[in-house]
Length: 318
Image (cartoon, rainbow, N blue to C red):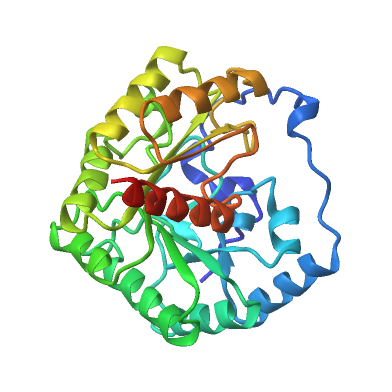
């Protein structure tokens, strides 16, 4: 049996092979980053390699990987490197995933302890092939981190569990992460093109249900801009998230991974991001990160510390 080579575009993204190429515009100066070369970057890379762990930093081609890894920060991606969905913005490989590795949660726990992380982000591919969408695997990973690194705060970035019974989300919430993150990714009008297979209001309801299950759990969501949305649609997403009592919003610039991916409609300016940040705080979010290079886990530890401080300050005033 031949082995799939995920370095080849046509094997990594077979669902996009038929798509016509979209030109990739030149990036403006404000979103250019340096190639990673630091000793801290290499140390983080070596620990992750030794533990045979996958990171979304590499799989999704995050522009911040050099900065984050140099500081010992990495976003663990569990349940393999092949996703059952084929979102047109995403660089993670699409296809039939492999069986879950029962030892993976333990390796994540050991890696978090070895890296000395004060805050860790754990995400995953979509696993529509699993009855619970991987909820128990998330819970096992949370418990393994708590066991090996009890002082580390844990943020999870989950799929939408769209095809799972309601008990799947409860399994994850019961494991008590510190932050439950699920990204809406874009405005509802772009879902058919950008996020096929997902449903905007199902994702919104997921975040609302998490708060209903555990009101003390911080919830977080994020979107990309530059996909073709307009400002009014972004403001409506903010209102929808606040109606679901989401605490933390991230907004970042969409960057096109390959010519086969969704085109970049435009590069949103830093001043526009500042305007989005001001609007989000005015709508009641406790924490907002809105910059061209913002990603879900970018500066997540520092942001979580500020988020927790904001809640404590609000409680003391009440």
